[in-house]
Structures are given as C-alpha cells and as structure tokens.
Amino acid sequence: MTSHRVLRHSALVLGLATCLMASARDGGPAVPPVDAVPANGLARTPPMGWNSWNHFAGRITAEDVRGMADAMVANGMRDAGYVYVNIDDTWEGVRDASGAIRPNDKFGDMKALADYVHARGLKLGIYSSPGAKTCAGFEGSFGHEEQDARTYAAWGVDFLKYDYCGARDQYPVTLENQQALFRRMGQALRRTGRPIVYSLSQSGQFDIWKWGPRTGANLWRTTPDISDDWSSMSERGFRQLDLAAWSGPGHWNDPDMLEIGNGGMTMDEYRTQMSLWSLLPAPLLAGNDLRGMDAETKAILLNREVIAIDQDPAALPARRLETQGDVEVLVRDMSDGSRVVGFFNRGEAPARVTFPWSRLGQRFAKPRNVRDLWNHRSLPTNEGYDEALPRHGSVLLRVGAASGT
Ligand code: GLA
Image (cartoon, rainbow, N blue to C red; front, side, top):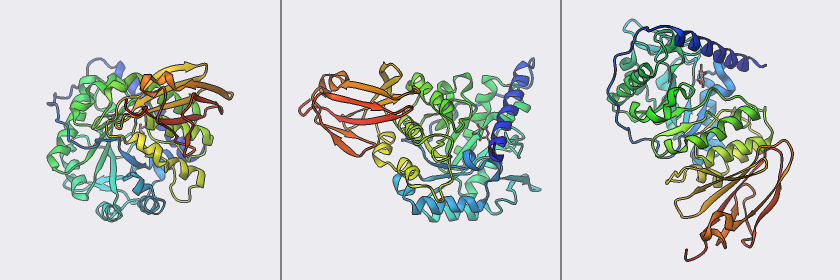
C-alpha cells in the first residue's frame, strides 16, 4: 500500500471503531436542536471539480493545489465545467489567540491561495468537521462553527465539505445530534452571506438523503469511502439507483469522488465510473493528480457528451429498465426529450447486449438519431443495439425520439 492509501485506510478503520464505541454508549450529551436551514439556491446541477483526498490524502500542499488549478485551466477541465478545487482534510493548523483557525505550514496563506484559484476562473473548497478533531486528527470546528464560517468566507472559500467523523468523540452518534450539528454549520455558512456549496460526509447513516436538504446542504455522501477498485466503485454506484428519488437540483446524493486516473482500475472500469456517475447523475469530483494525465484518462474526464448527461438541467433520476444476465440496462430522460440508455457489464467476462429500440418505449421505437457517447459517432437507427461489452465495460447511448412524437 502507498502511504496515502495507508492513511485513507487507517482513517476509515479508526472512524468505524470510534463510531461503534460512540453508538454503544448509553445516553451522552445531546446537541441542542437547531431550526431547519433554508436551501441556499446553489448547485442546480451536480457540482464538478477536483478533491485532494483520493490521490494525496495527508500529503496535499498549497503548491499542489496551485498545480491542480493550473492544470484544470491548461487541460480544458475548467472549460468543461470542473470548477471546484477542493482541499480535503490535513490543511488545518492551530487556532490563534482569538480562536481563529489558521492553516498549517503546508498551506500558509489561504487568502492568497483562494485569490490564485479565483484568478483562474475556478473556486476553492475546504474541509472541516463538527468534532474537535477531524477524521485525520486535525483541528475541527467544534465550538467555533460561526467563527470558522466567517473565516472561510473572508478567505474566499466557495465550498465546504463537513465530515461528521471526528464529532463521534464529542457526542453519541444519533440522528438528532448529526442533524443539529450539520444545521449549525449550515446556518453559520448562510449568515456569512457568501455563496458556499455545503457538502456533508458521514457515509450515509440515518438515511441522510431524507433530511440532508433541511440542514442547508447541497450534497451528502451516501456511502463509506470509495477505494480505487472495481467492487468498491461499482457497488457504491449501483446502490444509488434505490436512492434516486432523493437527489435533484440543489440537493445531491454523493456516492463519493472519482477514482479515474489513480491506477487501480482498468480504463473500461474508469469509463464505467464516469458513465454511471453521469447517468445517475452524481457530483463529478476528480480525485487523481491532474498534472501529466495520460491521454486516455483525459479523454474520460473530458468527455463532453457524457458530462452533458451529468449536467442536464432537468436532472431526472436514472432507473433500471432491465437486466440481461450480468448486464444492467439503465435509462434516464433528458430535458430535450431524448432518452439516455446505459449498458453496464458487471460480469467477469465479455457479454453481448441485444436491445431493440422499442424497449425504450413507443416514442423511441424508430428513433430520430442514436449517438454513442464514448465512441463519439452516430449509430444506425434501424432495429437496435447488438454488441459485446468487455468485462466491467459500459456503453452510453443518447436516443432521440421519433420526429413528431
Ligand atoms: C473521511 C471522509 C473522506 C475524507 C477523510 C479525511 O474518511 O469520508 O472522504 O474526507 O475523512 O480525513
């Protein structure tokens, strides 16, 4: 295991252990309830950007963040919609005499970093926890929520990931405590008057998708941490279908960040992550080192026809139409009246898909056009799709309804 993988893994194990201890405790301090926080009107489509955790974990520095911002401009990611540059855990230093949080030596001057990111047409994201310590043991926002929100706003922060993990040491893990603590920061962000996208992280406990919107949040993790392997990624992605009704403009289910380009999966598997996250639709937060990506990785992250599916303004939920052996057939309606169909081979061997267009319904039985979003070409509109999918591979087709329907 590389060092960041060890850190990611130990953070998860530690988190699970403290969670179990806290849940087993009888009673314990209850956080005073906080009123529901109104929606902030942000994130009408799933947030897109980059986050430091999956690749860098505790090694992230301000210099790396500047490098990512430069790369996102140079490689076309910013122009394709990836605008948030999000620093995850381990940027935090100590508090000054007035209690204001200061970054540690890896970061130095946060305002200067925010200015640098903004000057490139990008936005800056940061990370904290309602606990006294964060998941990785750095300074959290416990007792300083208002002050931290004001500090972030003064720096020019545009996105906060707020991770419950560390708060397990202060309070028993209950629905009421989580709700109150997330609302407390939601209120604090709102009071700053700065538009700050609010992202919650607690692995999807207590059906967070049902109450997340009333904390003022724009997205919430629905699963424990992803890792750079097929079973972790695919299991998280497909699980979202059952939760689709709870996700939409301004309030997104978040199956965790992209692993595309991190090296643990095949290119077919990485294309499948991009296909699945876009079809759901889910936030697209790249988690790799964007400097010096190979051409194939770039082509996955920068596939504008697939990104357009993720960013479709209607954001209707995807649903499972059928399964053919190991192949899942998912569909979603687009705002222009077209329908996207995704074929996903979850099996260990290549699998053939035979799919007459009529399965999409009468309006699509004789489609006006069929676009293959990975091969960037139009397909014949007669009959249907009949091809072999590689192991763990996927296909995304955008199908136009017949004229006059
Ligand atoms: C938790 C989160 C991760 C990451 C780490 C940082 O494990 O789920 O996404 O933010 O904390 O410590």
